[in-house]
Length: 75
Image (tube, rainbow, N blue to C red; front, side):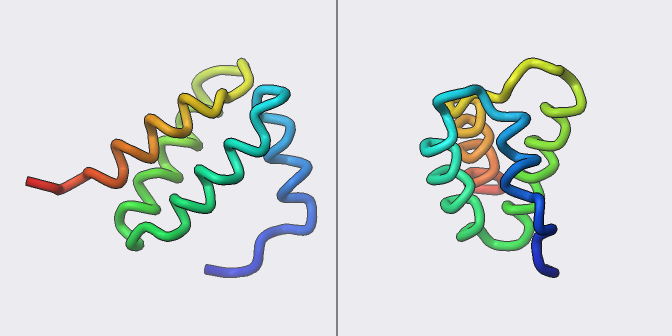
């Protein structure tokens, strides 16, 4: 994966619910530790949520996405 754009944090801050940045950062850090397939799934869910609604993304939504991505393909 290439480097993140210089304005990544600012852009991310615009889509997150105010006051949820710290929790969101922890969730995104955990997602980054997933294998490539599960990380891609998490990022697709996150991007889909941002496209689907102009409402800010809450940390509980991100946590649910992380759980779904982490368990994808598990028996």
